[in-house]
Length: 140
Image 1 (tube, rainbow, N blue to C red):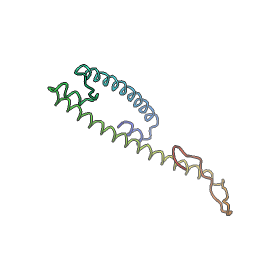
Image 2 (spheres, helix red, strand yellow):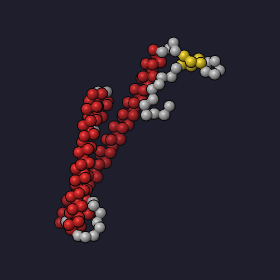
Image 3 (cartoon, one colour):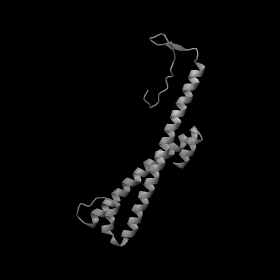
Image 4 (tube, rainbow, N blue to C red):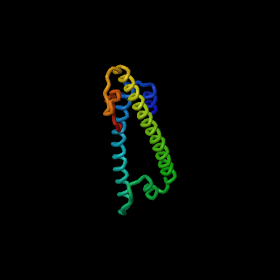
């Protein structure tokens, strides 16, 4: 994500595209690994007893009490890393929204500069410029 942020800041469209594709691939791989991990957790929990324990990493503490501190460490590390990832994702989304807004403004300026001769008139007879037709995922 840091590389994506750097690519957006440097306005390198090719790098943004390549990193976005890589990020999408990694998300798919992560989901596969997460699913496999949950399946293994289900097997471990089911093998330990017949009760309906939730399939969570924390449930392993009761199954393996001798490793409770290690499991708690994993939980804390996963929580911290998830929080960092969410912050970076939010930062990237905000940066992309800012870039989109700035690009829209720049395109409007370029359009208006080259189309000064084009005009329309309001109902009261006043001259109004022709507004550009740029609206990407935004309310107009």
